[in-house]
Length: 271
Image (cartoon, rainbow, N blue to C red; front, side, top):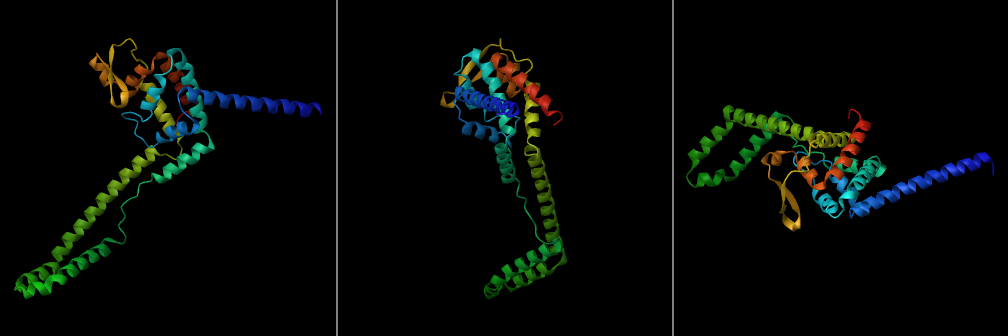
């Protein structure tokens, strides 16, 4: 075996070992949090398309998992979790899952086929046809005058004008609603998912620079033995949700999370 081939073999072996070590580390981090690769991936993809203004679906399972970890281990686990997440969202598997969810979440606008004139004619014809179904019975019941006046009203240009206005207003409202839906969709599901990642990282970093871990708080038990903290300082109850939840995760986890988030955001640049 030539020296060049031996060198290539050694380098390849090192790459395989490093990759295997990274996979093992990621699996160990997920195991510590009571998660599998499949469940962790599912949690990540659910974050896309969800508003980040009031909370996150990940909070409850993450809180329950971290609550079982000793404080001393939370920093390392958090760093490993960020590393795993960054690797996953840059993978082909994630890109396909995101593209599928983005497509599935595309708003279905209310469509108005044809022109206003065509819709107007169809509406007037339909009203006339429906009325004529009962006209004979009404005349037989002695209501010919009512039938004649109704027919005259239907033929009045003012009636057509009113129906046209209704159609135009409905179309305008539907277009405005559709535009709002598409705007929200483009924000929640941009073509580049890293835009969403960067947004979440920025919001997290902006909300958590001054978490007061010395604050006095009481655990309040919620449904399923899940608890939240209720702060004695009422001002803390108005803090962003990331701030309030970080208190429960502890300084070790928060410091590691902020370090990892800042580094990742720097890599993402202006996204």
